[in-house]
Amino acid sequence: MAIKTTYLLQTFVIKRKRLVPGDREMAPTESGAQKKAEAMAKRIPGTAAIRVMADDETGELESVTILGQFGEVPDDFAESLQGG
View: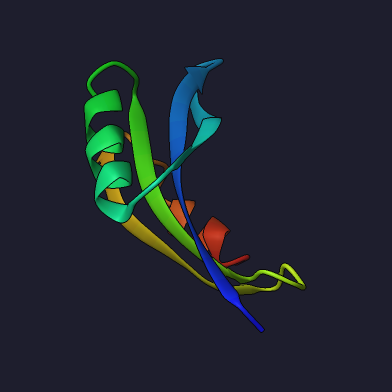
C-alpha cells in the first residue's frame, strides 16, 4: 500500500446568486497550492487549497485536509469533503 499525496485548488464562483464549486486544479506542492489559492481569490469569489492522501493502488481515501480558505467559501465546504 503506497499513499499518494495530491494538492488541489478548488475554486468557488457565483451562479444564480449562489456560491458553487468551480474548477479544480492540481498543484505540485503544499505551499504552491496555498500561494496559488490565495492569489486566485483576488480575482474570483473564493478558493480553497486541499491536501488529499489516498492509496495509490486502490484509490481509497486516507485523509482530506483543507490547507487554507481564501475569499468566499461555503460554510459547509469542510463537511462536504468528509462526506457529511
